[in-house]
Structures are given as structure tokens and as C-alpha cells.
Image 1 (cartoon, one colour):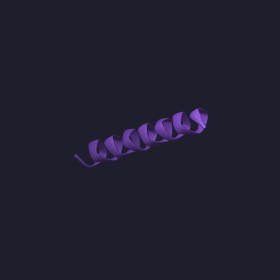
Image 2 (image 1 turned 60 degrees about the vertical axis):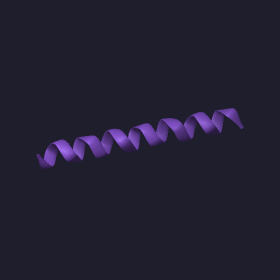
Image 3 (image 1 turned 90 degrees about the vertical axis):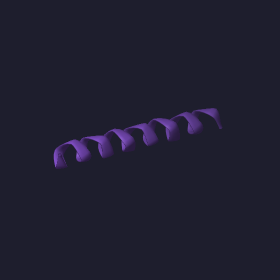
Amino acid sequence: MKAKKKLSNLLKNQYKGLLGMKTLYRK
């Protein structure tokens, strides 16, 4: 269970990073 939560958090961080990169490229 703990590992699963850690993995989901990691995916969330990756998604946030992708969104951040997209906004950077748009500017």
C-alpha cells in the first residue's frame, strides 16, 4: 500500500513537471 502511494505521488510530480514544461514552451 505504501509503495503504491509513493508511486502515485511520483506520477503526480512527473505530470506537474510536464505541465510546467508546456507553459514554459508557450511563453
